[in-house]
Image (cartoon, rainbow, N blue to C red):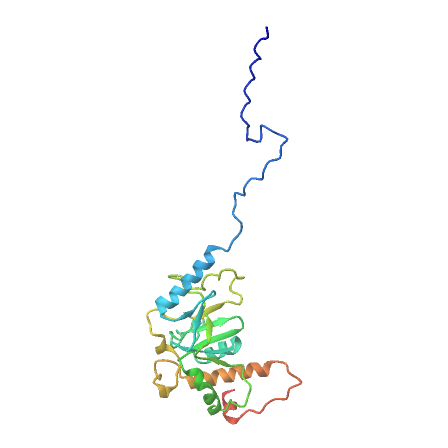
Length: 248
């Protein structure tokens, strides 16, 4: 008599852990640290800057980062070498000296970007520049003085921290403040910027802001001095009018 076949032992279920098959290759584990991405602080900082200019000062900005201010709406800009600009501001009493009195016209905003100085003037001032330089007898001389008016853009200096009296925080993604625009004379929140901007006396700015003609004359004089101090043996010296000589 043939006996019944012995029972077949049940097959254990397959084990999916690596210890069941030590020699079998395993799939690499998913990375626990996400890939590097743009710091969130950069976008947040620029959004805070944009909010400060648009909501606190009421200055229109252009899209993108870094934030740029639209020129020709609330103000125009005079762009000069920083060396000439500093000398002009000191000549006009617009910079505080150690132990000296408070500067005149405290609301007159001025920014510095690298080796350039940006001085805010009344909207429409850029259109007055060619005729004003001719009237001041600077029209025939090359000056490193540029006026930016309607349609132009100015990189916005970072908004000052609440309660801060020093330099603004470091711009995101930059090497400190090198090359970034910073306020030398920051605008005052809650004040109409137009009342503090240089304008021609005939346009109603006398007594409330620096006179544009006097500012341009001083800037042109200092720009000319800086130009004369540069080594240029191959270029002959240009004539200077008697009116310009009195201001040098």
